[in-house]
Image (cartoon, rainbow, N blue to C red; front, top):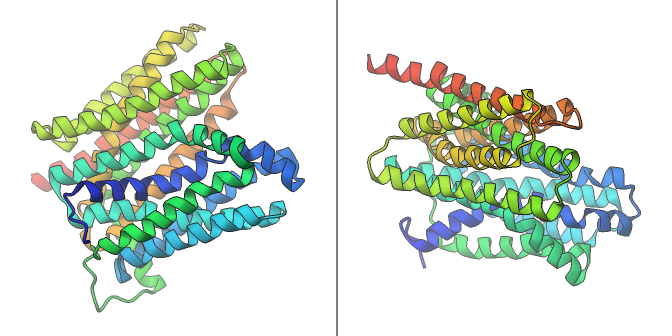
Length: 401
């Protein structure tokens, strides 16, 4: 049966498209030590299974985006889903670390197709408040996965060994391939458009030179960097410096993940009451920046207030739930003909922001305080404000003048 864009089944399909790439990151974490032992690999090298997955995910985005603008979203999603299933089976059959790394790279390349498809399908079918609501569902799906994936991975590991963690992407990919039978092509394809490197370069240049697209993409990437500052820094500070138990930290982290989802739900409610996307972004940026200043003040005073840390984690996560659906939606809005290229830029920048933030927190960590987390969080909050105010709002005001 065809999937109607306003149906519950379509919303579930968006959730599946969005969640599949994230499951590939978080699901295998509990199984990494067992995988290293089974493959006879050094513990220091098994972490490459994460790195190559993210590399494949990021590189594929840059390729999938312009291709989907020329041949459609369905072929990219179907190809990515099929490759994800085959690569996951390859991971289960791997007998050495090089084999595992090869299939993990292919897994990332495959997962990138559904992930990018979620954004572009929304842009193809929806505008305004409806698009913001669907983007909120995507943010909801992406952020619920980190809460449940490690637990599911640990349960599967106990059930049948390290290979079982790859059952989920196989199962999810098969469901996706079956569900896609009901989704018609959503892209407005120009029959005269041809795929060539000069054309791809022009598309990406058009996205990067459009101030509204660029400003919102940078704002979303920097806001993601602020979130990853607490994701990385909170574990270093609360577990390594203060000595909080991992189980207790899991509860704290789960609360922050819930607040991202609360933010995305609040976004939908406020949108229904006439609050514009720009107002929502400004509210989110103001909240996250104020909390980052509070955290930095505490860190400079050598404070160790766990309630304040939890408040900041929860508040910054909630603000991301307000910022991200609106910034992503507004970034894609001006470029309907090349939404694939615009979506690739948005997702690639978000990954870059998250990775650079995590690295900076780790690099600056002094082993005893929350200073590296606070500094990095405030830096990325200010970058988000500067990107949005200095690029997007200036361009909008100039256009309306």
